[in-house]
Image 1 (cartoon, one colour):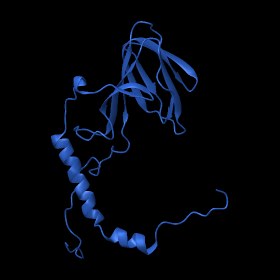
Image 2 (image 1 turned 90 degrees about the vertical axis):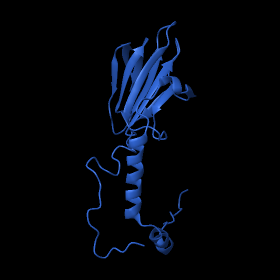
Image 3 (image 1 turned 60 degrees about the vertical axis):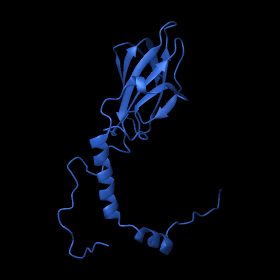
Image 4 (image 1 turned 120 degrees about the vertical axis):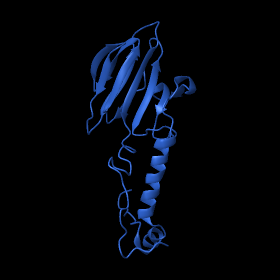
Length: 179
């Protein structure tokens, strides 16, 4: 509301709460959890083991998602979507940066107001745009379900703590004392 001032969250209480944890050790613990996920995670994701989810965007099977933590790789979002004959997907605004491969069917996508037709075997590239893009997909076939797979980076999990080169404590600082 107009005239309200934002309360600053911090001060001595925050400092005391932050002091309760060793964040360096926590970072290494996260690293170890990520390494275990890579070591023990599922490497072959079977379509038959995935439910067909009905959501605001349509009918989807999630192979890889930020909330799915039992796969070996979590740096990518990957799903399959189905659009029934003559139907359409939901319409979304998002950052883009997504690649879609049409597996079955034919139709078109409206990307920022421009119609792009496609059919099985085509790849649709949704550009990464800072302000985002508006996208909706349409199935023009009255008899065949459109099926496509889509992938994009899982920006929340992309870099891991290892940062691509490994993350190891090689020597402790002289002032460090294990608690």
